[in-house]
Length: 121
Image (tube, rainbow, N blue to C red; front, side, top):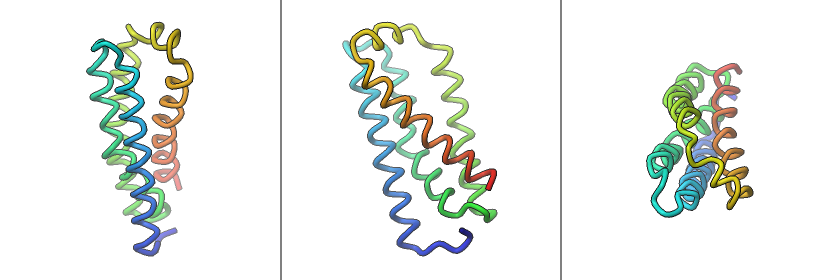
């Protein structure tokens, strides 16, 4: 979709923004009593990265879409690396909030799949 309408770009960006806000909100819910606040701060980067990935999806097949998707996924992969190596609270979160953790993970990975797919289209 190399020539999307401005309305469709806006709607995709807005959906990405809401997805990012949901990711950040869930991350702060999982924060608990102050443990793991760095993970929540890094997760809140989705507020900016998910809309970029969504707009990149709207421009998939064009150079603009590839660039936007790459701009979104590059810091996303670095944050993934951090989150995977700092899992000290994961067992506690899984015990007390498994549904929130699963929803967060699906949303977090979802925008990254969109970005990768837009890059490869």
